[in-house]
Image (cartoon, rainbow, N blue to C red; front, side, top):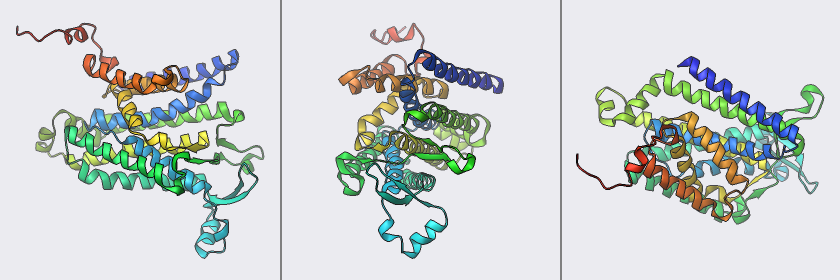
Length: 362
């Protein structure tokens, strides 16, 4: 098992490097922008795969957690604290290194939270919200759970659309880049997560490094830990797992919070990469799309979910589906549920066509 994981991981790393070299040699490096964004969406999708495939819990509200991470990080890194600089609390935060000064597109000097502090606050907030929502919601099952998470996602979308501090329908723009390596460290230019062309290749590798690190973490948790074994038992039969002494409520809540943190981290990084976020990232169709990506890749296959999530997201970002984008993802979800419930990775060429025929007793 461990050797197989290493082989697959090596193949993915080699593919990532080859894609970058191919775009460089062919003069199509602009593809790396969509590949980077697709990787961050892939991070969200593998977190949702852990929730749906291993814990057996359906969530149609993960776009809400994505929006919590993105909006909170954008707000904290763009809200100007200069008028409150004399406040003792603000001064203390500044001395602790949690604030920094930068210039926006209009040449205005802003005192805001650093991206690192904002990202940490966003992840903690998303985890707390997931904890508060998950405690009552995860007591539900089946379509009741799906409707409850759908309601949560709708609330987040309406808040993003209505609150002036979040930019309402315009969202939050002019978000600074996420500085990973400051200029003072090596005496050169700072390296950051940003959509600028000079950082295109760097951002591409950073995105895939984050995704693969998240994938390895999930695989270790699901295959080599006691919690992972508990989740697999829970997915097979919740009653049998409880009879074996598994605390099913705690197991479901833990993976729900973990998947929410993955979604929030994807929201944070993608927001800084794009330089902004809007309410379209919190719509119900976004959540449905993430569920469709998990279903296509296979709910119990992190590798399949990652590949299909990145591939279909890339095609969507390139505008291949045009104005029928949402309809295509809805059709994909319908087709997979009808013909290949286990995902394309477990597709049997004979079974799908039998589903079209009326049931006959042997």
